[in-house]
Length: 209
Image 1 (cartoon, rainbow, N blue to C red):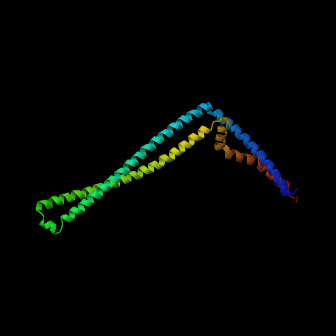
Image 2 (image 1 turned 30 degrees about the vertical axis):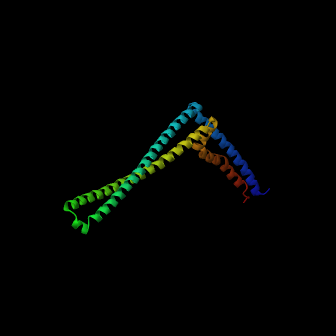
Image 3 (image 1 turned 135 degrees about the vertical axis):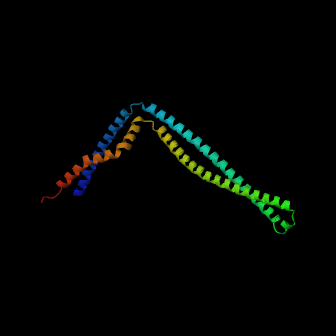
C-alpha cells in the first residue's frame, strides 16, 4: 500500500474517532441542556404549542383586519374616482353651455348661478381626487402591513408544526445542543483529536536527512 493510501486510511480512522468523540460530546451537552431546563419536556412542549397557537390566531385575526381595510379602501378609491369623473363630466358640459355666445345671451343671474355651480363641481372633483389619492396611500401602507403579517403568520405556523412534530425529548435536546454548540464541538474534536496525529504522521513519514 502506497504512502498516500496509508495516509488516507489512517486519516479516515482518525476522522471516525473524532466523529465518535463529537457525538459523545453532543450527547453529553444534550443531557446537560435537559437537566438545565429543569422542566418536564412534555409539559414545556404543550405550553409552547399553546403559546404558538395563540400567536398564530392573533396574527390570523390581524391579517383578516388588514384585508378588510384593503377591501374597504379599494371600494373608497373606486367610488371617489367615479365621483371625480362624474363631476368633471358635468363641469365640462356646464362650461360649454355657459361660455361663448350662450354666456352673452343668458340672463345674468343664471350665468352667476352657473358659475357658482361650476366652481362647486370643480371643487367636488378636486376633493374626490384628493380623497382617492389619500386612500391609495393608506392602501399602500396596508398592503405592506399585509405582507408583514403574512410572513409572520407563515413563520408562526412553521414553528408550530416543527414543535408539534418535535415529540422526542432526547432528539429535541440533541438538536438544541447541535444548534448551540455543534460547530464548537466539531472544531474542538478536530483540533484535539486529529491535528496532533496529522502532525505526528507527517513528521514520522519524512525521510531521514
